[in-house]
Amino acid sequence: MDLRTERILTSVWFRALFAVLCLAAHLKVAAMMGKERFNLPFNSSPTTAPAFANPKTDRDPANWNRLVVSRWDSGHYIGLALRGYTSCPQSSLKNQPLIMYLDTCTLSFYPTYSMVGRVASLGGKIPIDYALLGVSLVSSFILILLWTCRSITSRVGVTGAYLSLFLFNVFTTGFTLVTIQTEPCFLALTLGAFVALDRKWYLFGAVVAGAATAMRVSGGAAGFAFGLALLVATFRERPRGALAWATRGVSLVLPAWGQLALFGYFKWRFDDPFIYFHAHAARFSRDGWGASWLDPDPLLRAIDMPLHEMIFLLPCMMIILLGHREALRRFDVVGRTFMYALLITGLGIAIYGSFPLALAGMNRYLLHALPLFFIMATVLRKRIAVLVLWAGFTMWHYWQVDLCFYEGGPGNAALQACHDSHWIGHF
Image (cartoon, rainbow, N blue to C red):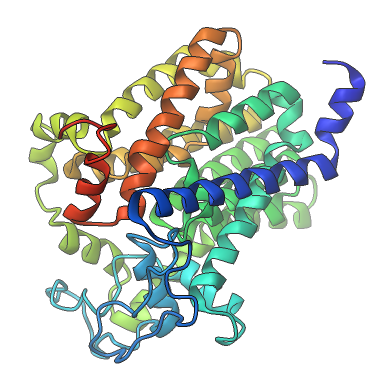
C-alpha cells in the first residue's frame, strides 16, 4: 500500500465516513428485508410510540416492535426503559420462585442499556425505541472508528484492520450493529477499553471496561481482560511512588465496577445480589447443567436448527486455532494478554451459557470475541479464494437466515416466511 492511500485510510474523515456507510448499509438491508419478506415498512406505526397501557400488568409495551430493527429482546429493553422495576414486588425476592414475576418484572436482562436509552430520550421527548436505536448507532459508530485507529492498525496493519472490519460487518449477525440490543454498547466499550490500555490511559480504561461489565453478563470478559492485562503491565512497569501505586490499585478494581454496582443495587432492591442469574435460570429452565454436557442433543440441534449456530462456531474455532499466534504476535505482551483473555473468557461465557439451549444465540455471541476477526483477517488475507467463499457464505446467511429470523421474531410466522423463500431449506 502506498503512503498516500494509507494516509487517506487512516484519516479521521475517511474512517468516520466508512463508519457511516457501514451503518447505513445495515439499515438499508434491514429495511429491504422488512419490505420484501414481511411486507413491512421500516416503521410500521410512525405516529404511535411504544407505551404501556398498564405498566403493572402489561407484559410488553404496545408498538415496541414497530421498527424492523426492534425484535426479540428489544421488547424487554424498551419495557425496562419505560417502567424500570416499578412493576416488581417491593418485598424481598430472595429464594422466591421467580417465574411468576418475569412477565412484568424484567429481571433476566441487565437494565443498563435501557437506562442509557431513557436518558437519551430526554425525558420522553424522543420515542424510547428511537432513543435506544440512537444509542446503538452512536455506539456502533464509535466501535468502527476505534477499529481503524492507530492502536489497531499499528498491530494488524491498515489492510488487516479494514479487512477484519469487513469480515465483522458481513458476518451472519453483522446487522446487530443497528438493532435495539446491547451488543453495540458492549462492543464499543470493550474496544475502547483496549485502546485506552494501549495508550496507557489506565484509569480511564478501567472505567470504560467497568462500564462494559454493566451492559450484559458477557461484559465480565471485558472487565477480566482489562484487569489481567493491567496486572501484567503493573509487573512490567513497576510504578514508583505511593500515589502511582494507589492509582494503579484503584485501576485494578475499577474494571468490575459496573457489575458490582448492579449486584449492589439488586441486593438493595430485591435482597438478592444474584437475582439476574436466578431469573435467567428460571426463564430458560437451566437446572441440569451437568447432564447437558453429556447429552449430544444440544449439538445436533445446533446444526439443524434454523440459525445453524454450530455451522459457524466450529469453523470460527478452527480459524482461531490456525491463526491466533500470527495474528496477535504484533501486539505487545499487555495487548496480547487483553486479547487472549477477552477471546477465551468471552467465548467461554457464551458457550457455557448457550450450550443447554442448543447454542441458541451463538451466531450473535461470536461478535463479542473481537480478536476472532483480527485472526480471521490474518488467516484469510493470503487465501483469496477461501476469503471470497467465506464472505459470500456469511453474507448469504446474513440475508437468508439470521436477518430474516430476527425481523420475523419468535413463533411460526418467521419460520414460515423464511422457509417459504425456498432459499433456506427444510428444518
